Length: 126
Image (cartoon, rainbow, N blue to C red; front, side, top):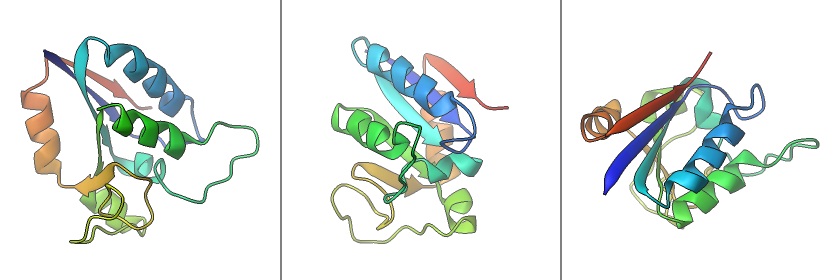
């Protein structure tokens, strides 16, 4: 099976990139193994407790993608700089208490590995 990797850099409500990625991944999962890497402000996407009034809750969407088989990872340095930290204990499929289930914090080395094994890469950033 071919692999698609999507790299996001924008926070969840500053652009439509999170929703665009969600729609792409929904379709791609039928034919591809899918990786999503959250970089820079995109590490805010999976934060629990966000209550956007006029937007879809991006964290819930991405948790749902993880349940369907997408690999969703957040940059460790970017996350730490924004107050999210990985823990050794895995809770509900996540290594960060602040994140939705199925989404883990990892290093840029994993991004490098994702990219090297991908047949297609999409970067959604400004």
